[in-house]
Image (tube, rainbow, N blue to C red; front, side, top):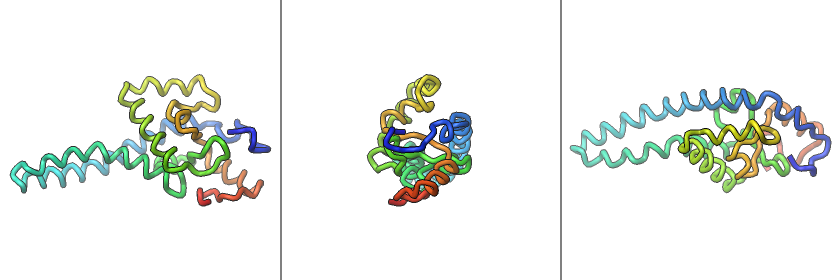
Length: 166
């Protein structure tokens, strides 16, 4: 978080975030599977009903996890459902405002590129300030504890609310 934010102690915002992010990822993975199963079944049945012509629609399946993450960052909570359950929110590093559409897109794209390359690049979080991952750094976003963020908003009277509305 930039030095433009007065009275912010990084430790308050990031304590326990790495563990929560890992658990949130597992929750999100389960939720994505719960979404993918019925979508797959509908597309499969569509393929059968169209005597194989509809199986081409299966190319839409990889878009489900991407859209899940991208659209989640644009929600008022600025978090995936897994992150929200575990009390996390994704904010701009510069001023703790909500992510822009471009930042959410970059965040999601770099996350999936990282995962496609075995996920080992996620280990960069062990060596960066505030345990930021490569997709955090590329998009200039930071994952913080929602409760601490909300308390800070109330104390400072930030112009955007804890729900991420401008």
